[in-house]
Amino acid sequence: MEHNKGVVASTRYRKPFALIYYEAYLEQRDATSREKFFKTQWGRNYLRKVLKNYWTCSSVG
Image 1 (tube, rainbow, N blue to C red):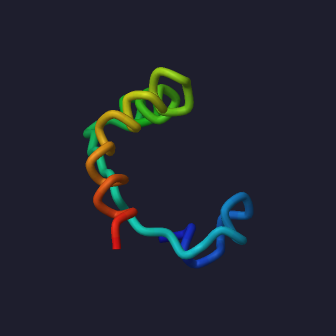
Image 2 (tube, helix red, strand yellow):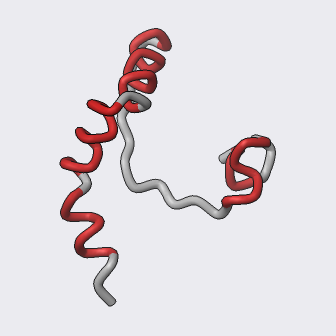
Image 3 (cartoon, rainbow, N blue to C red):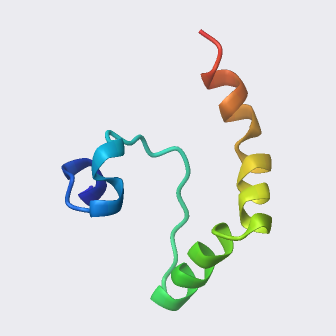
């Protein structure tokens, strides 16, 4: 929500955003660890693989 409001300086000029992937965790440290994983090349490759059908379908039309 803060990203679309323009509160976060690093994403202020790239809004609006649409949520296309979501994971929930009970512990903050688990969520932080997962977020750090997504910032690695392995994490980016994982997301590319998981969202492959989304990118294919959303680019058509």
